[in-house]
Amino acid sequence: MAPRAALGNGRFPEANQLVVDSSDARHLMVRTTFGLLRTFDGGATWSWICEGSISPLGLLDEEILITTAGRTSVALSDGMAIDDGYGCDWNRVSGDIVGQKVIDLVGDAHDPALAYAAVGVNVNASPNGRIAKTTDGASWRFVGDLLPGIVPLTIDVAAGLPGRVYLGSNDANFEFGFIDVSNDGGLTWDRHAAPNGPDSAYVSAIDPGDADRIYARATFPTNTLFVSEDRAATWTAVHTADSRLAGFALSPDGGLLAVGGQDGLTILSRADVGDGTSTFAIVRGAPLSTRCLTWTKSGLFACSDEIADGFTIGLSIDDGSTFRPLLRLADLIAARCPDGTSVARTCPARWCEIAASIGAACTAPIAPPPSPSVSPSSGCGCRVGGASSRGALWWLAGMTVLLPRTKRRRDRRANELHSAPGQTRPSAAGNTS
Image 1 (spheres, rainbow, N blue to C red):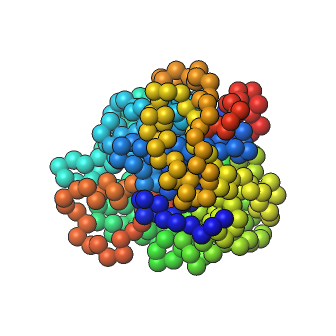
Image 2: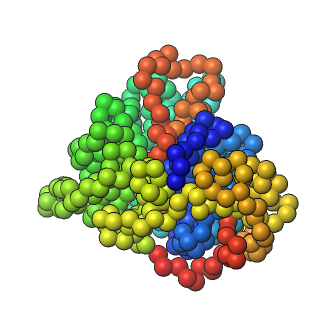
Image 3: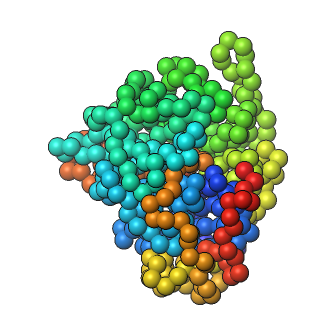
């Protein structure tokens, strides 16, 4: 691949989040610095969806989430967009989050129709947090009371305990970090200090077998992975790296951890000590310039630097020992969508510019995929993979007050962590996850 050229938005083309459809392991969606990428055949073919078809304001690493109905939601600075199940037609959701800054999204493993959102709410020129949830993907309502004086960053739910929710946040001046814990689906919260100040409130994963074991990443003063085994009451450092920890994922059984950044990927094992605590040991390392990590029953997915590693998306089925390329940018094509959809109206005029910047062929889409059978009001949310939290800063950037301290402004999002000709979307009956 030729050296990368910066895109019109000034960013280099790379991927930084990957989510997998919980009802169809072959359906993946990838967030990039130049739009979304979709595949319905497990990565054999990929197509590009432009940012403008989702929001006229464009995107800046907003969180994405695939529902079990195959519909993708995108958190936005003024609400949320949801697609038709194919990434072709995007519309705004309804409910309490309309016009609000949606910062993070997560699906509930116990109830595939349930998803949560962390929302930034400006009240009297001051930042506050709210939690919203949906049972259909299209309509969202607030739960619980206003969380005053905080900037929400990340939200996650426990697979091992219904109703257990963790929320990472900062105070309005970004001086303190908090991890809040709810046992009733966000109605009430207990507050704990983040492991190491405001730059360590990035909730990264919850152990699938122990809802009290939570992992958080820090970006300052060191790039450190922390673990708490008592519901965020106390914390222990697990791993420190030289570069920002852009990706983190747990194996489906929670026994292995994958953590990585620009200086490489590290796989760690976890073992019970017997007193409610764990020991961690490095299993292996790999020189993979990691941009994101997602671990499912299909294997460990990684976003990487294609110049350094030879691929943008890879899959490992041997716990990170080796990776098989799933996507090289030169193989990307433009999404083909029916006339009248937001992608068909917006994206074709941009494709050749994008193709030139990534070394792909400037070929027009040949034919649209079959019309989606998913009704606009159906869907639910189940995230696989990490969230990101840059959206919190963009929310605050629009305010006329706050943040007298601008030193070492934190990149809260941290840049975390279709069909091809002849391709049709398979049914969920082929799910291998």
